Image (cartoon, rainbow, N blue to C red; front, side, top):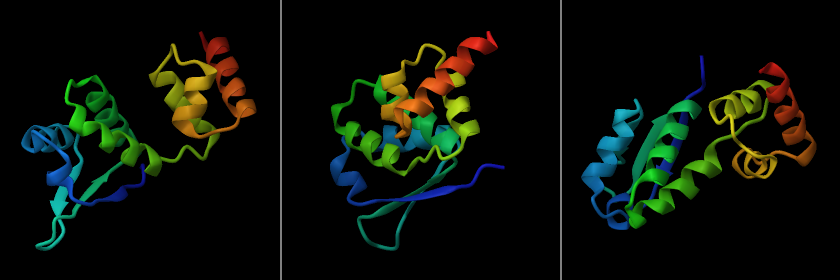
Length: 122
């Protein structure tokens, strides 16, 4: 079972236009989004897979005010194991070495090894 990641989103509503649509998009993928007390901060909880789906949907949307959330979520996702890197590459079969390095924050050698394995699996 994948571990749940908890991320604090400061000033979530103030940074995002169309916040209700963004909240619906986040919850659509199974993540939970709750306000922390009476503050303007929010907490997002979800697995790595769920957060990746949210990132992809935000990237495909036309809303410019949501782009800050991509950077915030990407910084909290970790691809520490070989299996998690391979799973990421399988979900994006046309991913390049540079894209994999940027997305997973891995080394060049790790990215090349994953791409090579992915090509041999076909």
